[in-house]
Amino acid sequence: MKIIHSIREAVNKRIIQLIFISSEYNVSDLMTKIFERKDFCRLQEWILFGYNKVSLQEMVRESNETRRKRRSSKE
Image 1 (cartoon, rainbow, N blue to C red):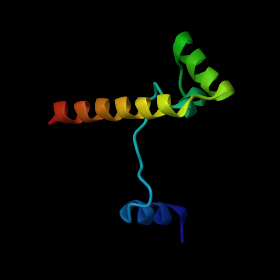
Image 2: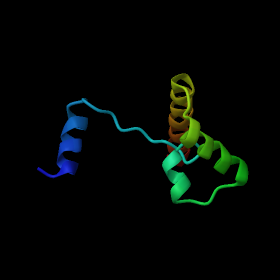
Image 3: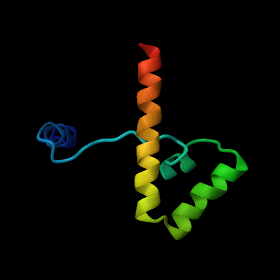
């Protein structure tokens, strides 16, 4: 079975939940996008030294709220 089908099945069974992470908090974007110096340094610091779990949960919550606001403004 291809990996995409396995992921889709896990999502449908609510085993995993995919969430949107904005570029502001997505360390993988550091390798694919151009950032202002302050944002680059913040993401670089997270890669080198990590970030605490509480901060990550707060960032995900903020990111999801921002995404919901964008969706509702489009409708």
